[in-house]
Length: 94
Image 1 (spheres, one colour):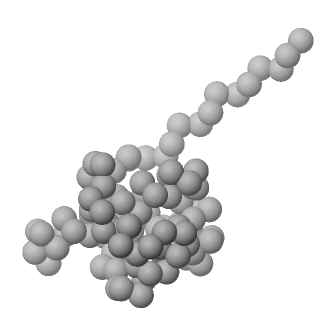
Image 2 (cartoon, helix red, strand yellow):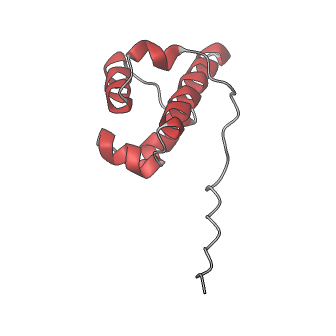
Image 3 (cartoon, helix red, strand yellow):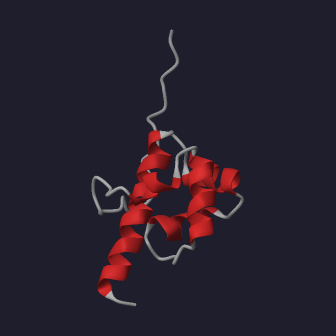
């Protein structure tokens, strides 16, 4: 696969991640709504899956956007590595 093809997959994956995060969905929640594993969504967001047009349409419907929204350039191509930080536990009020 050529570099520009890999860059395209990465950009689409980052855009999907942005749209998912904007809806306050975890990869696990999005995967469940889409009907796939969280690992698959992770691979899509990293640009490691060569997506078909049908898959793009299904992902867009799951995000409740038009498919063309997935082709808009993402704000950044950098993926957020690792798991998100856990929220600090709240202290009980006395």
